Image (tube, rainbow over all chains, first blue to last red; front, side, top):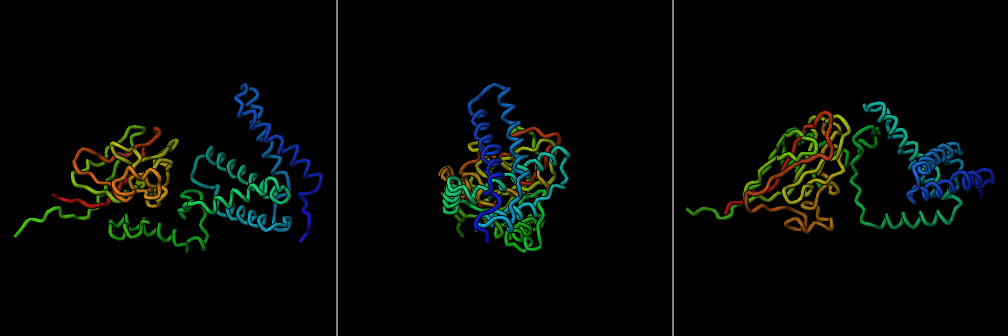
Length: 184
Length: 142
């Protein structure tokens, strides 16, 4: 396992610091401070440019990250993108919006995966936030997204998916005792 | 032979209604002596347009049974209210606001016939959705 990753090279560091991180901070500050319309439009344009720059960075993979939690993040991203189906029944504009969301989400995961590896200032804060989340009483419904989501064979065997399908069937059959048994 | 006093019977009712944009639609005039323990909603015919969120509640709390944030134009067969996080204060025992329910978020009792169940959408769709509302609980007679 390499001690340093390609993300710690000066070339990538410069891009991260000056082309991405500084621009994000400056753009959000502009939007936050209720500036003129022109300034706000430029801030939004700069944020779009940031996302494009992030996508131009080398994509984190198991081969080029070296910390345990970075590997976890790579798995989370790959799993999400494997399930997400952009070819849904929605109109073209929704497709574009949906793809944009995935694009931004992907950029976000790329950024935090990279930053986590060498930026203790941010990485420890992520650790703290995730720990608090994990220890909170957050409820995971287990219900998969209804639309544009691909269930794998393994997903089909998940208890929550089986329960939800059975509930749909019980409601259709007006099998009320079974319905009540299938609701949390 | 004596007459039973306050005898309790379980019930399950199903209603099919069309959404009417941002106008609340009355689903059921709740009879006196009703305890509602569960409300589910399922999309029968998907709406078209900008979608929107749908809520289910009564005269006092318009999302007391099913919370907003749910997609009214979702796919046919989508069920709302079966997960704890989708339930309103009347039926969500985990929420801090569960005090508005009759008993710690587990059920809602209606002693007289002055209230109704309503559904409402937060937007006007180009084609309204048809939803099925399933109401479970107990009737009691005093």
